[in-house]
Length: 197
Image 1 (cartoon, rainbow, N blue to C red):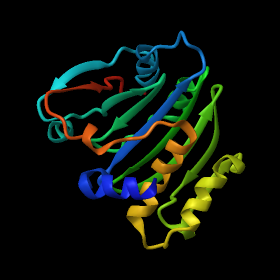
Image 2: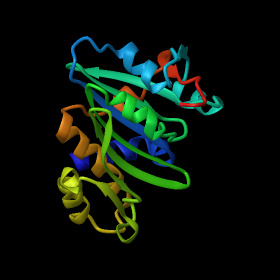
Image 3: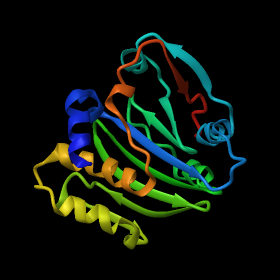
Image 4: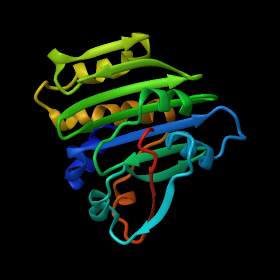
């Protein structure tokens, strides 16, 4: 799986500058994507828009721009303009009656992998790109397989280290990200318009 994401980043190198990939597995069948989007937007309904060239136009927005993907009742949200991660409060709200996985980074670094469930952040690893700077919080057993993936990679293999959280999250949830999903025109996007989220 790491090689799959290496190829994705090779083909879409702009993602290495900043992204936020969130996977949500609702545990209650009554939770719909609109509910999750409101939680992600701090309780408000976000703006839905069609962008002619989303990967180019998103950088012109001042708010986070998301692609939304669905696979067998699991939802993926990719913020691809800045790597803006939601606040911890927003992530805990998103995880009520759900499991949430998130990885993010931006042009200043900020590489993070996070797991939340039942309204609580359960585990977080920060600065995973550089092995000597890694910060871990919460139940570290949740991230055991992720640490093993990182340990198997050369410390200078930055593309591999950015691929590892995607591979880990796909193994945990069954939800992956495909390169062709990003090569779209006239595509629907969601723009978060609540600055407090």
